[in-house]
Image (cartoon, rainbow, N blue to C red; front, side, top):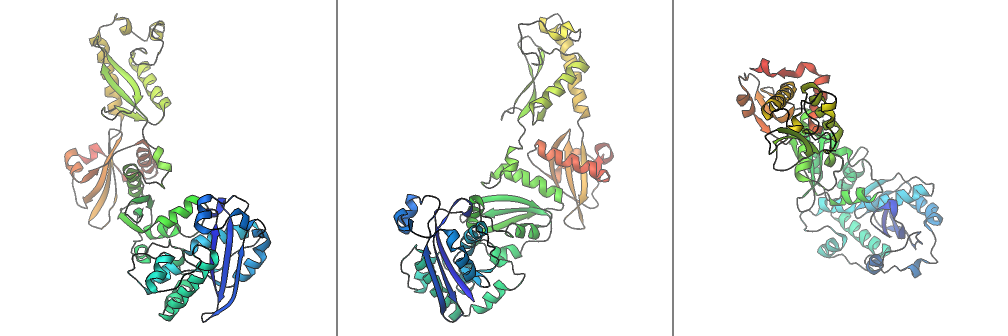
Length: 460
């Protein structure tokens, strides 16, 4: 038994919107056997633009039953059927969510007439219910009302059955079939072509714009997992409606996929990615010379046209490093901008760690020499190493390079490659922007798998 369903709502997602009208038409595959239609009194106001679209006004639903009152009837009608709707995940998410709130569980199989129409009648410009019915010569009445749209979907379904849709229906609803869970505009073939290997995937909208970037140890499994549940939230529903295609970049290892994902999120700034947008170094350690010729260290926010000596995600990390350099190399806290009260006596002079550079009692040359020593120490203690792992093919190996504590880039080397200098190694790699998040990933991986680390003096 098929249950052909259409609903009208107060908004586009179930978690914060109500159903204002429902129509359920039971069909045995040959004819309509039962029909149910009712207005529903929502708990939330009906927005004016939806009143204009559907014609359903607050006055019309004032005496209508609540969803909770209709829930037993709706559940009994749907239970044991194949749930059919045009863009089925929308209608199903609303009814499942509100039935659950009323104490009923909806567990029926789903069948989407958008996806079914694409199988039976491929190549149409639009598969919206109105455009599709117009293209197929199907009569539509009472548009944007649950009963009118449900009746149009019934006629569409019967038209599809007359054009050998049954084979496709059997494939859609058979146990283990995953296609019905896919977004309505995403071709199954694009998911099927994904490899079972690490990589980065991109969800695109109708115009090709990237909506979301993700990483995966197994591309096919990870992409499928996005569609295993049909959440009721606004962002989830919009996300599913907007996905039209998938592209991907394969990577040899999961770590490379993590790194590439971070790079691509910052390059493309997709609207549905949130977490890694904050992983940008906020502060840098800079060196400059003042008008008196003294070298000065300063922590400041990252600036586009200046290259910092080192970067920090948190200001406290930078302060900790500079205080260590001040203590170890007897630098002036005022000249390092760690003592902000410039009118007060230098705390370094009082503690006999500053030699008086801030008061010009120590020459710039002498002070600058210790600053240089501090920077040399910092430079020497920033690690340089390669992380070598398996490649995409047996004839190559993957390589991630950390140069003086910073992520340089990654790429692939021939399996028998013998790198004799840094320039030769870099010739095989693609350079990428770096950030604290990427550095942290690499350092954590090296700590967990130290045998993959190749230090520079071994490489040369």
